[in-house]
Each structure stands twice: as structure tokens, then as C-alpha cells.
Length: 441
Image (cartoon, rainbow, N blue to C red):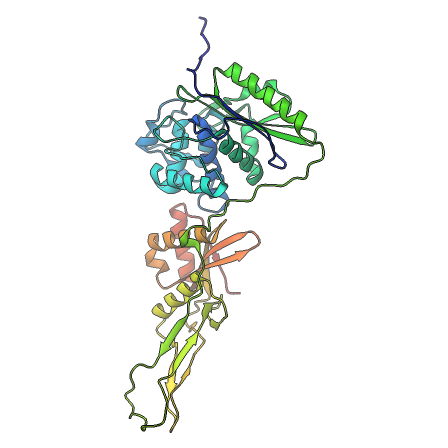
């Protein structure tokens, strides 16, 4: 039986073309109009999923339990059932290739615990990427009041997807893939087959949005990204995108320096801003006889900046990051043999403070655990706090520490015995939390 092609209502049209290598705008029309993005939304859902996997928040092999909320999402969907468990990698495939709404919701719930919390993370990430005119209300892109974006913002997101997580980008060029319970076909396969050099990225359709597409293609040393909102049908949208890609290749230079976009910076949050904290200890009351009148002496005040190294040593420092200070204060509360200052009386002299700079390491508390690597200090500190609250029995008394290296920010718990570290890791791994032990160094 003949099936008439789906034709959208007269949704507003917008377009954007950029040279992917430099980000230079080659063409735009209504690029800043806030419109319904439809399933282009899933680019952000997938971007955060890749970020979470790389940061150690979740594994591709994590078995995600499908909620009633996710299973109830309308088509397009994979057909997930409430209570079913499926590996995250299959949810990612389904969302990227088939544009499955149930898979997108399940991804968000797996990473942040609820779709509402995940939506808040989507909006924080959009802000960090410079998507200034985008507001997300869900993880899948079905029409919702206030769920809006622009051709410019979605082009920006497409470029970040390409350069920030290149190891995952090949997903978008797969004509089909297996999504755990069945094989699924790519919603963009017509353009991928018809346009030379096309290798992604994402389609979208709702009645309110029309037929949307963010597409990328590479020819020789050139790469172009084109975005269309408001297409009337799949065929007319693909034809327009092909026209825009041709325009982009004709206008882009053959010798353009590659300037990858910067990774998102989340440090704008007040929670992630480092501070220098001064720890002041003063003798406010003395039980010794008062000094004779006229001596001019005043109670001694010891002022020091402190931080904590890997062996648990309080060290004088000129600048101290907030999380290290918090760790030092935690150590002071949990180790009974830490002495911040002591005063020894001397005849006819004002009290002089002494600062003891060693924390006891009795009991072999030289071990620790690592619970992931993160893209920002804030993300690492958040994971440490979340893990500490989830596993209080074994992590009580340990020291939360973020260590920056060339690959990111390591989230560590230090000051543990080998047995406690091993037990903590086993318990965390049972909760699907990435963990490995750190030996004495």
C-alpha cells in the first residue's frame, strides 16, 4: 500500500553553516531564533553521556535499570520494558542511531538519578559550551513548553561533539547497529548514502519543529557543519542540507588552521571556585598567673596557611585551594593525635605557639581509593561528596582529595588501611561505581 510522505506544518525555518576547522560562520539565516529542536536535543544527552563515561561517573558496561518513566516514552523508541536491565552502551547506540526516546530518558536517569536532575545538568553544560539561547526541559526533545534552541547553538553543539569526543563520533555514521535487544537503522541514512563525505550527525522531527538536521561532511582537508530547522519533509530537508554543505565547501578555504573548541568550563559555579583560607589559633584565656603590669605582652596569635599532601602532612603554604583546606579540617576532626598548636611557658616571656606538622599514620593508613577522573575540580569534588554519603561505613575518617594531572582531576579518598580500602572498593563496585585502590607512594 502506498504511504504518503510525512509533511510538517509550516514550522519556522533557520539555517547555519560553519567551517568546522575554525568555527567560522559561512552562512546563516534566522540562526538565533529560538525554535523547537526536536531530537537534536539528544546530541546534548549523548554529549553528557560521553563526558560521564570519560570522567568515570559511569561505565559503558553499567547495567541500567529501566524505569516506568523511561519505558513509557512515546515513539520513536527502542521498546524497553520497565524493570529491564540493559548496558549503557546499547542505550547510547539506540539514542544516537535510532533516536530512541526511551533510551534517551534512561541515559539521563542512569547518570543523574532522575530526568529532572539530568535536565539541569544539560542546561549547565549548554551554558558552559556557550549555547546562550538554549533551554532544555527533557532528555529526548519531544515538544515541551520552553524547550527551545537555535540553529547557532545546535551547530556549536555539533562541533563540540565532533572534536571533544572523537572516539564516539563514529556512532553517528553507522547505517545500522545492534542496540542490545534488536538491530536499529540510522534515521539519517538517506543523507549518509546520498551525500559524499557525510558522516553524521543527528536528525530531529516533531510537528512543532518540522524536520531538523545537524549534518557534518568532510572532503579532502575541509570539513563543514550545516544545520537546518523547519524542513517540510525528510526529502526537502536533506536537499536543503546538501545545498548548504555544498555552499560551505565552496566558501571554506583549503588552508585553514584547525582551532578546536575549548572543552566546557564549569568553574563559573561558586561551588567550584577555590579560595585561600587562613587558619587562626589564638590564646584567649590562660590559667597561668597574669603577667606583671607594664610588660606590654599580648596573647600570642599563630596564623598559618595549611594544605594536605599525599602522606597526610599539614604543610605551611602561601596559597591554599579550598578543597585541601576542607580535607585538612576533616583530618583534624577525625585523627585524635593531631595537634595544631601548643604553647610552652617560659619565664618572663609571652607564650610562643608551636605548630606540629605531622598527622599520625599509625595503623598503616597509607592506602587510598580512586573513584574516577573528571573534567573539572567541581565535578571531582561533587563525586567525592556523593560517594562519601553513599558509603559512610567504610569511608568515615578518610580524607577527600582532588589531584590535578595532565589528564584531568583525580577524585581520591586517602588515609585508609589496605583492608579498608579493599573493602570500600568492593562495596562501591557493587553499586556500579568505578573504584580502584591506591597503594603507599
